[in-house]
Amino acid sequence: MEICAICQNEIDYKKSVLTSCNHHFCSSCFFKWLEKKADCPVCRNVFKKNTNYDIEIEREILDQLEGEVRDYTNLIEELREQAFNIEYKKNAMIKICMDMDEALKEKKEEFIKVNNDVIDLDRKRQAMNENIQNKIRYLNNLENKRIQNSRNRNRKFGLNLAGR
Image 1: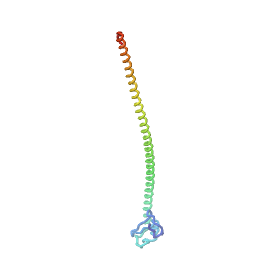
Image 2: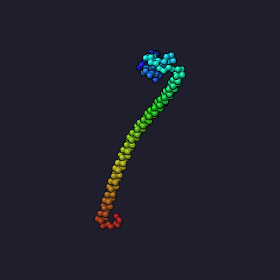
Image 3: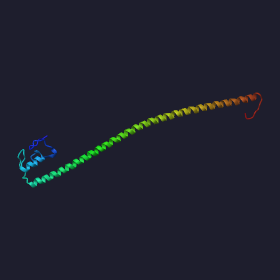
Image 4: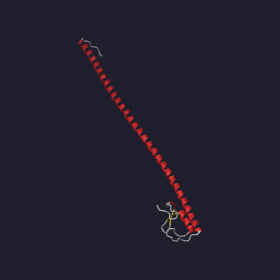
């Protein structure tokens, strides 16, 4: 940090003046100095002779520049607020996505469980069908044996019963 040779305070470079002889001063200190003297407070380099008109023009320019700085500062604040809002919305969307991802994982697990239950039920159904088919075959075999035994018995006793 540099010290202003006029007021002996640290110079705020946002509100400073750099002279043609390369010295920094607080802008308010420098313009007050110029109202009294037309030379550099450090090296005594003579600036062009200022009139009140020149100082007024410089003050108008300075006021205009300060207004532009305020406008840019306000714009920066608006941009910061927008960036904050965007960051907030982004974080909210990330949370929503994470919640949806968690819900999706739960639904996948639920689907897998239901699918496994369906597979188990299908296996049980197939086993029952096989069991029923086996019982039907067994009953058919029994019926065929009964019919065969009945025919054999009829032949043995010489009976000829048609259709049996």
